[in-house]
Length: 504
Image (cartoon, rainbow, N blue to C red):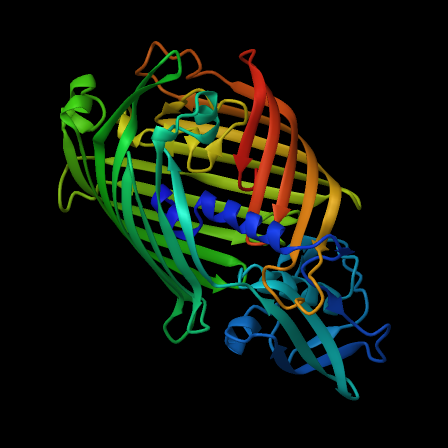
């Protein structure tokens, strides 16, 4: 399971916002329709099957050719059909599809999406060039992203951004710096450093090796983070957060080693081993004896997380087609370095994306987390308000318990198709002088349920909750997604909310 610390070391929110500001400042007022590249094929083929004999790559000033070619949906040397096969329903390439294109079109389309999803390139174009008879060469042209970043980090000491906006206080802001290189050695290695201080503080290091070993199917991510938080949620009443705002309220040290596996082009697995050390202040300890297990003031534990998933999304930043289907288990407390905690969670996380017409799209997701344990300490309870688990419109409430299930759905309308705000003359190759963007208008509907049998003063626990409303999504380069949403809820509330990251 991805932690808040890992998210920070990879892409903090302020990092994305500053990218957007840089792109806007650097672009002028010329516009041109564009996406993130295309497939370029001849008007017709003279053969029923063509033989892809070789491949070349252009534009990868840093990235190694093999990092790109490994993402192809076929092997160099394969023969691909140029006609539409009579297949009503089946598996072709990476997706369950009702086929409407030739094999060469489908596999090149999937290949281009796979290369884009490495998140190493702004644009990817694929060309097919005839050599002789039915022998063809594949030519891949890429435009690399900017890989090194150094930006200020802003951390708001509040449960979430919308909560802070109700009563903004800049004394609750901690600031620092984030640096990252996302393509070391041209091998997609990532190294990151995050430091901030103020009312809260954090020091974090991360390093990611996408492929290790001879088979190049295993990756390794390592993180080490120390944090000192001044705002801590320690309980709830009427589903409103009980908070302490005091320096040194919660100190945590987290060390993770995460192994990633890719046995197939669209199949992935994760094994994460973590060591966690945490302690709370005397002030927080005096407010509750349920924050840590057995009324303890400090804990140390080992954790183990395993998952396996199938991912055929056309974009990992803002998918419109494809599927993500994941099963996972999460064990907190292995009984090795301590016996402080013994919790076991397991569940599913399914996402589905379909194109309804030229402008309309639909997306749905469902996630369920079951537990073999009950009455977990507050620090370890499942939350429907953090780590990407949420139902829209409930930002001002806390929903925590031993188990949870929730559903989110969107119907999207492409208000502004992906396009580029063009560069000044002579600056076309700049990674900042062009800004790609799109806007999607959407109607959403969410539902969620949290099981908590050990609290009696939280009326929204053990109750099905609903929300619905309208939203506008802004999507741009470098995985930036900003959401503007107006939500109505089943408890009679409504309001405007900001969101960051893709909704589903």
